Image (cartoon, rainbow, N blue to C red; front, side):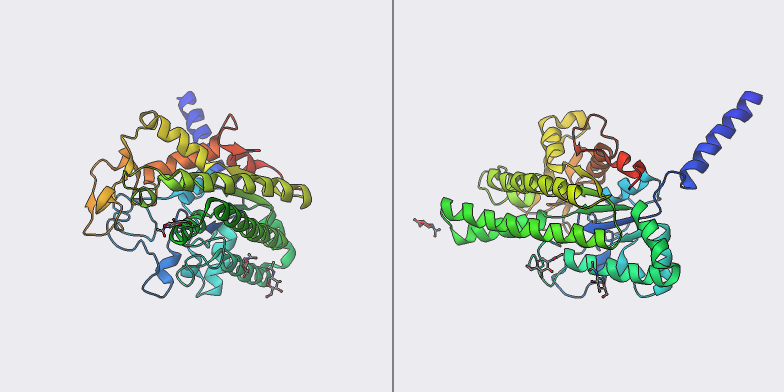
Length: 370
Ligand SMILES: *[C@@H]1O[C@H](CO)[C@@H](O)[C@H](O)[C@H]1NC(C)=O
Ligand SMILES: *[C@@H]1O[C@H](CO)[C@@H](O)[C@H](O)[C@H]1NC(C)=O
Ligand SMILES: CC(=O)N[C@H]1CO[C@H](CO)[C@@H](O)[C@@H]1O
């Protein structure tokens, strides 16, 4: 009996430890695209705004669409759970109408500014999303409201311990690659276009991190761009349905530049700590041995229609697969909930520095920012 009571005590203390946030950061702030969006786009006006607000989005959780581009939860949700939150922080546009609601959420869970279709460049899918620069602007507005309530010093202290998740770049790459293809450029021209393109991406990414830092952010978890050429939406452009090696190479080149950028910023901005997650490397490993991760299909969208299931969005009229946990792709662009949890696990718990550098997300949570 005593053993039983002791055991219960230990268990309840562990639960308390997790929920009382002993090691948990005060909040989590999310910036990026549809891989992290939890509903911001549902509040944007316009016919051409990408929205996950119809079936079969959300079919597995919670059973109806939530604005997540997934059959259930997304990568931001699973990372949030691993930190100790219930799910991703709420979408900014849900909170913004009430200053009180916004400040209270911002200080207890955090806020998600991520928007489907968004790019590092304002020009990417312009008018149909919240571009990265505007997401930072929204964070700045949030911070001002927090400071008006709690004082700037207290807010800075909270933010310095908070978790800043950033995942963006795939849409910029896809827009650039489509434009290059349409322009029929020579190899030499493509090389110089690509160099200029990387230059503006990195310059804008640098401005984003520097601005967030100026506003008090210290801990950055950054997800790089995945195998852009193996998304169903890219493969359908190929007559044989093969991955586009050009697009995969474009992603790898950007990821190299992003890795250097973060190392440079950490060397110049005192107290900045980061973990860079290798989405591309994880996809390469997963696709090389799908069964090891429980996938039987790594090329077709679970929900889609037309050739390769990739000619249309997931919609109520699309075909829906039954064994969704065995598919890597949920729709023609996004991972399934099952793929998302594996991504989050790889980035959070990575024990061998395989998919994160220089530390994993869990270490980033626990590191004491200077
Ligand atoms: C692309 O450009 C090359 C020469 O630069 C030309 O021979 C070819 O016809 C062009 N293709 C298209 C589809 O315009
Ligand atoms: C945040 O907003 C204030 C007030 O509009 C502005 O002065 C400041 O430059 C902004 N900071 C950043 C980093 O964007
Ligand atoms: C965050 C940031 O600085 N974004 C800038 C990216 O570049 C465009 C111009 O190309 C600016 O308008 C954005 O403000």
